[in-house]
Image 1: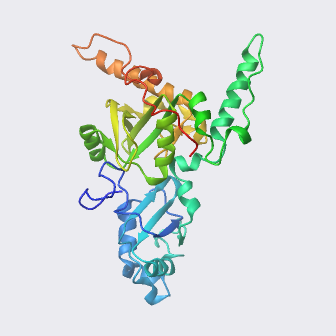
Image 2: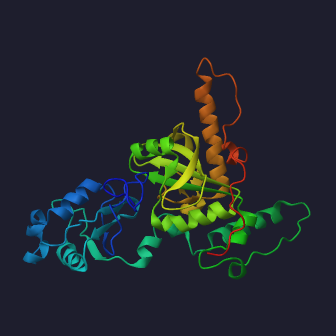
Image 3: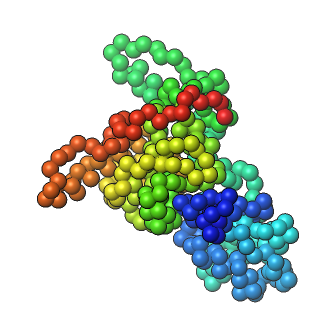
Length: 339
């Protein structure tokens, strides 16, 4: 997470605009309109006197201001509001639960405000893909298709969700064997943070993404981090983890040419309700064949752009193209253990 000066023990500034720090006292807010902005929420929660006429509780509209920041998750129509104390959390819930963010628009439902639950974090980003046997289910489907297509099918080893998966979805030996390449979408609210990351070779992700990304780094041959800026209409670039995982971790940028979303309309992610790949939360994992196809499309687009330049004469995929088997070498830090 960011600190006000970008230093200290918190997250570095290479991060998609998180709250200033993660408070112990967090209010979950539901029914947030999907087109809401961070500024709109900030003004609403920091100027309660302007919505007091909605609230017949009077004095309850004071004392619950989000001094520790607001984190908006537009795709889920919710937000997390960080408060500075338990008293402020109680006051905020009392003040804002049942109010409308836009009281003059009858189409906007009233907000639902409550104390954040542990499972709320797990529904965001890669957390939303855990605990559902996603990788084991995918492998079973691939094996079933192989048996159907083979002229003389040989029955492969059955993958059991009880023996080969854990509560974290899959154990490290399973991932190392069957998922040598993994692909993740990471989001930023500003291009500035990504430009800075390209310069410094560093990035920091949200807390609930760290465990899955760390395991992927330790157990897979190649991990691809595909970056986009919210509402930019394009993917910004692609990088690989290049060092020990921590609050800020080193990455190696292998693509910094932009890829417009109109070039990826045909790519849908079955691991995210079959949505287009552009429709992803921060930390969403792509199904492997979709991730590989995305990088191939990126290479094709880059080659087309390069072909329009007078000096560009060669072809061949850039590093990371076609799943990125080459370049960068083997990055796995050794056999992982169950997390």
